[in-house]
Length: 51
Figure 1 (cartoon, rainbow, N blue to C red):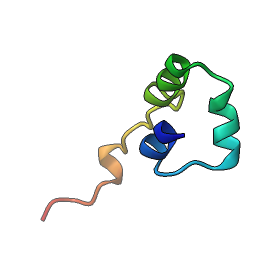
Figure 2 (tube, rainbow, N blue to C red):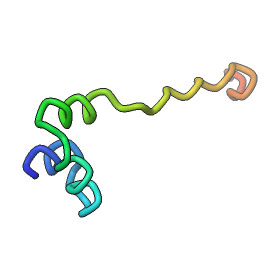
Figure 3 (cartoon, rainbow, N blue to C red):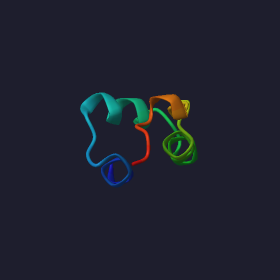
């Protein structure tokens, strides 16, 4: 519970249940290596022209 509070700025009951089923090492790995992909940065065509 302490790990979830520190890593997630609070934890919902579903988060506690999800991570509670994991070992400590698995929970740390899941929190530190998320599956989310990094978004592609906007192209220069969408940036405003320099003044």
